Image (tube, rainbow, N blue to C red; front, side, top):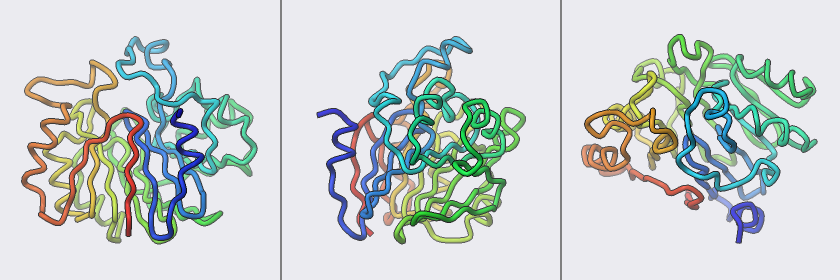
Length: 260
């Protein structure tokens, strides 16, 4: 069974979400109300075509198989807002796009109606169709000055996806201003991102029930010396987490059922 079929067929119980890992920083969330949210999905070879960054993990789902109610992007870098996938995904009339300010240019280039997208600055919120999305402070430096994280509140379950950010714990916590159930954060430690140790330190501060590693193994350029960007380093660092926090490394295509 293909991943798209698994997403379509899974029945999610009240008080739960189904979370699928799409590799890199990409995830697909399905709610009990059958809402499908895709965030930061990199589905093509755009990074190699544009910058020479060869894809090391095959895509687990094709752009034409994405049937999302919401398609979210924390910033406009190609591995978070895929310029080769967006034209395909935008053909689905039900999909609503939410992104950082720098995503708007690509939305407009693909003739996405202004009624079908929203762009957010840090601490701004959008609510509709059963979910609430808040833009959370992120610092990705000059690489993406308008980059944000996202807090997704769906049926009472709160998922914080940090997007790409350096270690700015106090500002992130203040921007969130709430407890979270799941935290998703990078561990690659390159290009201004959190490394494994910083990701775990942030998790200890925010105290999610689950923290999930992201942004690893997709590009050779995201691997550094001394285990930087290796999920085994993250698991080693997770030994210092509070005993109430579960650390996870998911395989591409893997399903995790979170129960509130």
